[in-house]
Image (cartoon, rainbow, N blue to C red; front, side):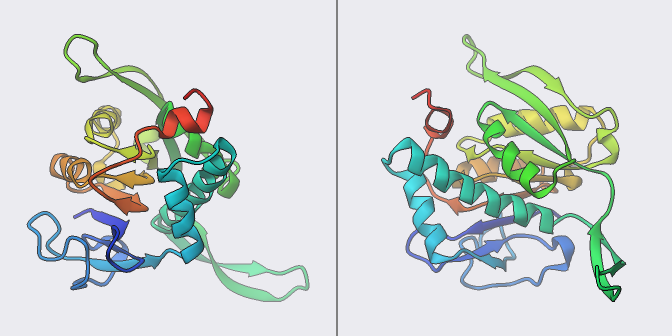
Length: 242
């Protein structure tokens, strides 16, 4: 079973809740945004968003200067990326400090990569590289067909051994979920199992999250907020093309 991890929408507290039992998380949190629902029957607390970051989240959602918008968006991206990295498998290791002392630590297992859904997903690439300088990043270009209005894949380039890797899929806004569903289908065609895909997003609608999880129940979704209205202007504002 996959997991859904998100901060609660307005009117609830500031914790982040999720669905599933990935990485042995504890279950059943009654206050969860999705507690008791058919889609999210079990929930757990994952991490807490600081008040200053809640303010930055509102800065991204509402009217603001591009400088403030990008600054706040980059902070949210960093939070989601770091939580995504927390979901990756690791092994214990012994680290020798500069003073010669031994320290029992952990390190990531080999075989991770990022994939951004162009173009707005590219805004999240630097946040991932800031945490993992040498990580490989693939790209997918998906646009709506002018005649059918259905999501269509125009370009995809991945590391050749992506079928062996855990994938951090980056797309900041989940509105209908159609674009992400098509992206995951492409990854599956390249041999990637949905259970090793972690979707990193900033904002999601309940419909978008539901659509993705119904199509791929083993996928993990990380987002800062689930709300009926998602800021669809993100890509244009971030890249200055609004």
